[in-house]
Length: 138
Image (cartoon, rainbow, N blue to C red; front, side, top):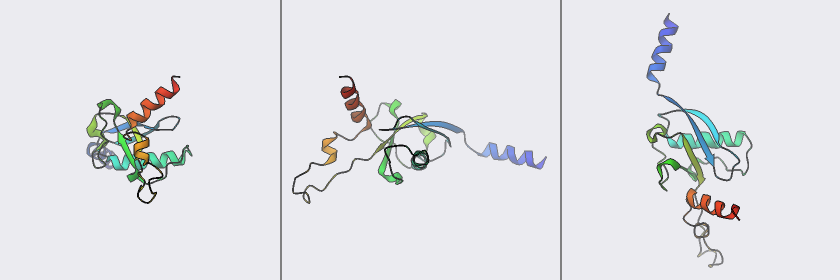
């Protein structure tokens, strides 16, 4: 009797659970796992990177969650989600994980290389996606 009351209280106090699907740019398929809707975006990125590494997917991404953006493609916005937002606050379950663009110090390179940001456009997932569609349609 006491055990069942404890389970009911625990379920009443915990938030809704969501099955999220995270598409990692450059990877074969999405990573799927269940999260609490109160989970922070930062923690979801961290869990995605750990799952990705555990599955030994390529390309290797590393484990620093600060080096990645999480986008919600259904919102029609190019703006990355804030790491401090709650994942359930966006009303979506499908997301795109992108590595933040790296810029090189052009002064140190004496102008020999352009920044990777300028080579890749604005660094958003949409520009990468559209570029790959154009290449594959030929």
